Length: 234
Image (cartoon, rainbow, N blue to C red; front, side, top):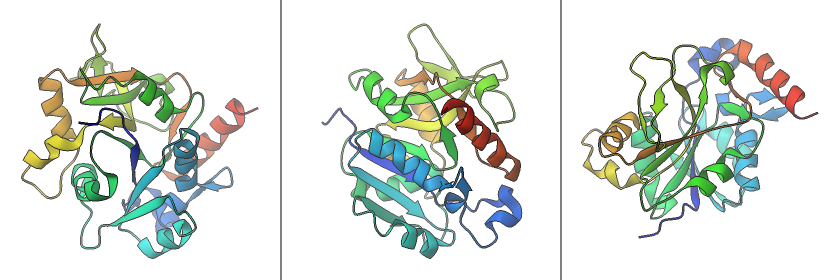
């Protein structure tokens, strides 16, 4: 079994409804932050980390995204034509394109500063004891995010659900071993189902991102993200 991740699943199929009029005729991954489409911010992280195989799922206004990505010979497209499969179902459907072993996953609706998040995950990955490694941050450093944290860490770095106590926010980047997806009966489901199983088995870990991050989930978050990039890239 291969222990080192070499492929990336980039989630880009969502409707982007929280963006309102901005996504009425444009898929959210093509919205620009700092003059660059969100999907290109994400692909730049993968390129910088040296990830050769990249798979992107499409559903909403997919032809626009496909045309934008056409020049990228290192990108394969996973079309979710009938319905959005969510993160778990989407990852499972894309496995034939990703290949065997653990994979990176990355949400396409955020911008990052500081050390490359995918490279940090790869450097911290230990396939002998981990089946998932999630990148996290304190709520105070999770721009554009509202609500409490998702997880807490124990002394060994294993994650558990925050359960209403102050915790760490999942930033939409991880390495995960996807074999457990086969045991989930639903076609449409969140990766939360697999995380809960791995947490119960003591095989899910977390890593704190030390740089900046902004969730670009609402129109007002674009200005937040651009301010973050301007501040941290001077």
